[in-house]
Image (cartoon, rainbow, N blue to C red):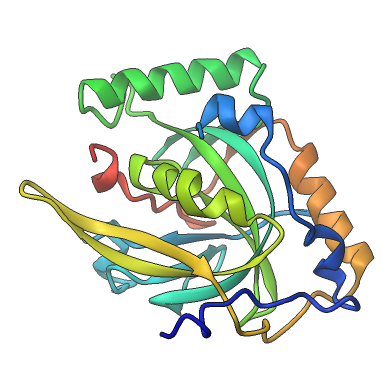
Length: 246
């Protein structure tokens, strides 16, 4: 891809995303936590090489991006063009996708408790507590997926994705970007991460209205603490736990 092809694509003034496409300054919450939907929103993951989704019945391809919703995983490919519309912080506690507890308020005791336990487990290279709960935290981005015309979230919950957030995602808020899979190799480990760069191609679809965009953004930003008890068949949480040690 040439430098010209990587040039930043503009958002047309009549695109409902335009009001969220100005240059956004860094903010205190993000820097403190990470450093220098209306209704249910599906989410995007990059499937790790040992993720459960790579086996039956889904047989997902490791290294590809997938949209996860109540119908299961939908393959998006090894790269996706997105508008990085907004973000929030997230702390998540979950157990086999049957009980999910999350907080987006960085001042709330629940958020601080989940983050503290997550960091302690990471230090001892342990993924679950004695009761089988997993703990994750990091920035969560609201993305408009141009190819399929849908909003989804992208949770940067492990060290690899937090690094991508610090170095490439957060500075592109309000812009069109390409997320592409990246095979990372070290002397001891190898795993899937992502590369993020400016996208020169206008998005294939745009939201139906500015009011709709505002509705989704408001719901995304205003959600604080959530606890859900799920049926195992309703949906799945497929993280990239293999990257947590990196």
